[in-house]
Amino acid sequence: MSALRLSFAALRPDAAHGHDVEATLGAPADAQVLALAREDAHAALELVYGAYKVRVYTFLLRFTSDPELSDDIVQDTFTKALTALPGFSREQRVLPWLFRVAHNAAIDHIRRRKRFQWLRLPQLTGTRHEPESADRHSAVPEREHIEAVLRTIAPESAAALLLHALEGYSYKEIAEIQACSLTAVRSRIARAREAFRVEYATTEPPRSSLG
Image 1 (cartoon, rainbow, N blue to C red):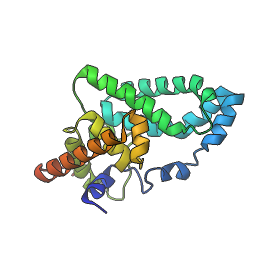
Image 2 (image 1 turned 180 degrees about the vertical axis):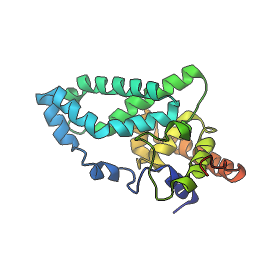
Image 3 (image 1 turned 45 degrees about the horizontal axis):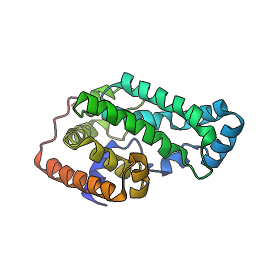
Image 4 (image 1 turned 90 degrees about the horizontal axis):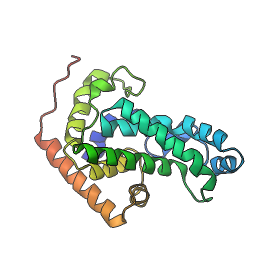
């Protein structure tokens, strides 16, 4: 396992990784959702919202530093899903579509704000989104260090790296989420990896405030 993956392990909420989380949480099959959406869009939306809301919301928190804004984007994303789901093709994958809509809304907000800010740990601490670990105190400085490094990376590149390293999406899937070419995804992830390695190696981790 690479040093990058070992570092990013500190940001994961549990041992499950990438698409395996869907199976762990008992997420519905896309075919089931789409069949239901053709009969009852509201029932399909309720199923999708219960399965994926927390993952989309947590992803947005890392972009915006703003729980209220993240919640607004989540609500807008799933509202769009209500009208979109009945028209999906049988090959359409639901969660990547949700990530794409939420990702685009967050990027638009970041561009308007003209700065990129990741959620600081204190805003997660004490909420149901705070990752649990066997030794939470020792993990705090590592997470803060990683988040500080990620804030130095361009938004699109950082998002691509997170989607690949934490959510487990392939380059092709990320290209679909980010509406760009495979070449662009490869370039974004390569730049983000290199920037992460350099910054991670040359910056000092913060001292834990919990110790």
